[in-house]
Length: 170
Image 1 (cartoon, helix red, strand yellow):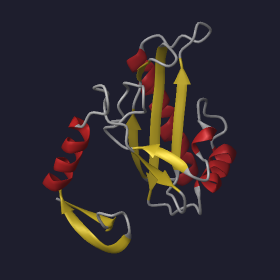
Image 2 (spheres, rainbow, N blue to C red; image 1 turned 90 degrees about the vertical axis):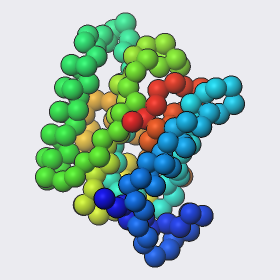
Image 3 (cartoon, rainbow, N blue to C red; image 1 turned 120 degrees about the vertical axis):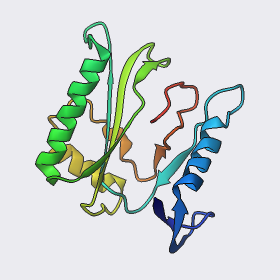
Image 4 (cartoon, rainbow, N blue to C red; image 1 turned 60 degrees about the vertical axis):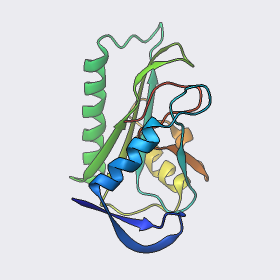
């Protein structure tokens, strides 16, 4: 199996090149095993400044007024709700789902944290355009994080975390 990349190793646009699955896994292993500072997991990200595929960032924090109950069941229910909404808006498309749910040290509570990347439907001109579309079409989905659509949006990479947090995006 091969994956096609359209960026060279310096991040500049280039002709597409192929990367073997083993090479990709090696890159992930290096990133995943890397530690930052005092033994924290890696916290690398990419920055969206131009065209981007549609993406949804969903975050819900458990609180005294809002108990999630069984976390696995709650997570499954929210994923089903999100997939149904995506299908309603975009049709039967490919969705890549990433998850970094777990205990949030910042909130000292469980945080459901999902990211959906919608493939095969085109691009938005920039993250704010994507955010406007998501606000318009997904307003009934509780937890959509509209702060995730800034002009220069940082997006955490898979197998990484935010600085000072232990929840790894997988």
